[in-house]
Length: 316
Image (cartoon, rainbow, N blue to C red; front, side):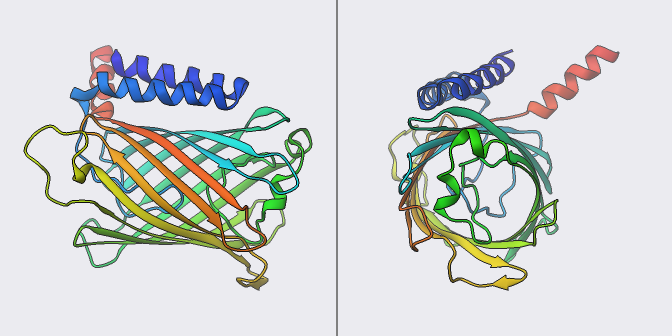
């Protein structure tokens, strides 16, 4: 019952954020953080990487559900700044398959707040044992409008000017896209090093667009203390990620594309709530000058088993 109430509250909060913009999202983030403390007995131990754009080879544990509330604040040259919150529901289907559903929104200052679309993501890990380099295959379907400003990835010739269009105009453009990634990831002496190579195709007649994301992270301390501790060094993870566009299949290039560098700090509480923040800086003239990302996540253990048991009891 507590799990159901928590998820229902999350969805109600997203609706509020769409209507009220930043204020609603902040309230939803606080709701998730408080709920995590009450759900602490259900927490599962899982290795977390703090990245907002880059993916590692660590999938969700089978039967577990992770709820994440994230947001991007971006400065906009010659236009209004914006905040773009999104909700992620990530479920471990099997040990080699993780599924995720995402709902996006945005609020542009002195403009409007609106829902901008959904994403449906699948990650497949073909090799279950740990190797020096661990590959993961990623496929995502996107149904978003031109007003989307989450900037979850940068491909092709994406640039800051794309987000300067008024929301009531940009929302009229609809994109149905397939995004693929080759994820390569390694764990070494406490470090995680991940490299992503992106290919995105609009299901219309646009060419394939390409991009990249690379990241590295490490806990402040590897050995955990024997006592319950919120502020111990092992609860903090620091890292950095770099990402940008690589042009299209007709013109592969680094020139005229957007590129970003973003340090990351994550605080992983023993009760299962994780807080992350990442200030990002544009490295080229086509980039946003500044992107600030923040988020809160909570992992709920045994959701799949609880649903399975409920269905069995219903049909017995």
